[in-house]
Image (cartoon, rainbow, N blue to C red; front, side):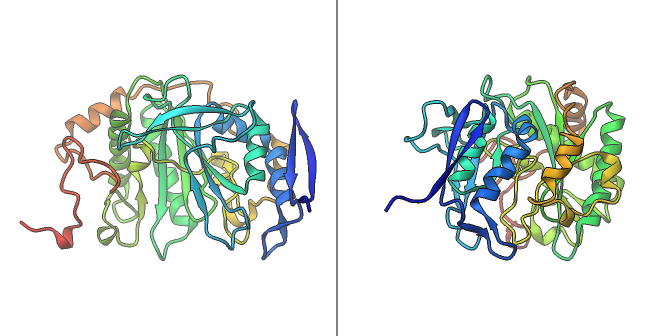
Length: 331
């Protein structure tokens, strides 16, 4: 027997939604149909965040109670209109990743069980030079959203000193993300170095609140600035992405004024459509100006602490310190 389905008109496409009544979020009864319709309702904003970016998919085809499939390659079998872009991983291997070019592509992937989308910080026209500097503020265990909020405002202070504008969003959990549009003139290594310089400047403003320590045993009860989210093949969840959590919270773009009293638990798959219908995309101006990284790279070059460890899946990188946690290091 064929699976039940409905068809949604998304732009110029007809997107088939199979098993639309399958429950994806059991605690609140959200179905696959609601998930797909959510992404269509905030489509303009979600597309702005992902447009032309290689995008990884975090799929839960049987709902969030099941293990995720983290998919970096598009399946060979897909509609002709769905576009891909070739990316290179740290290992040197290549893959054809989803290239998001229209809202229908997002809806199609949601029908595959994609709960959240993870775009690279590059565009298809130049996959070797990021156009986004990312600040990922991750409260360590025991800390809540308020700690990340405070770290975000410190980040804004540093960006303002540099003459840059950052765009803030919730992570869909306890964290906060800040994105800065940059000129695509620097490679992944240079952008990561700029991210380290920015993270260290934020840390210097409040060492009791913020840390750049890569090793968890050194972080303490602080907010970790994950500088490695600027490395090749490292991604943060996209703006407007739903998270695979019981409450169906969303990684929600905010204005800085809204961040002052925002509660991420209020920003969900079921509340965001009305907000979007009223306000539109509050990050609509993110592409209006792109910034240079020269000053941040000067800060990095002048800092005698040098580089910080890369993620474990990376080959040993030039100038990188020992990739071993301090408690296990040998002289």
